[in-house]
Length: 291
Image (cartoon, rainbow, N blue to C red):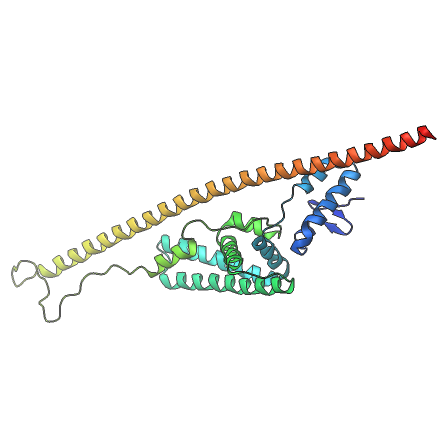
């Protein structure tokens, strides 16, 4: 009989959540067995939901194993992503500096690299080979989980079906550009050149005031340029968010399509089982009639 858990059902000691922790080659058989048991128990709606569960891609499966086995390292990844976003926001608000931003980028990268190495070990122990392409997809998914709240929510439960990607250059790459941008400076006065002065009046007594005014105008211009750069970065981030939103919408639509196809497959399998039972019953009735 099926039992319940917080969001899933059991079959033979395996529940829906545990399906995603099994070796990848066992997923389909265990999912189908769980769906069949639910159908036999009269829970056809739940059976259809289970039958529609997608087998994870290799990269998604690897990330699921990391979430289940590398809890401390996953917590560090999320913490590094939060710190990086805070440093980036501080720079945009004029409160931070490039040093803290570079530190945040390096910490987030180190967390991703440590987990990617761990994924290689996990896959090897299961008899699967981690190709460079899969490694890149695992790293992309980890970056997305560090830097995007919605991606993190998908990764956190260890039931990811497809790898994720942070759209565009990625926050970390954007951060590097911001952190490495040179500060605007005024050209220094060549050595040996006389300092600029205003018109001489009564021993050049107005020169200090004019110099102060020129310095203030220079500072105002620099503040204006900094505000323009910050506005441009903000617009870029908003455009990136819109691209991400559109991509997530497309991905959800694809997933709904695939689930519908799998539900149809499950219904056809159920129909085939019922027709087989009907044939067996008719054959038995025929035998009894002849007897």
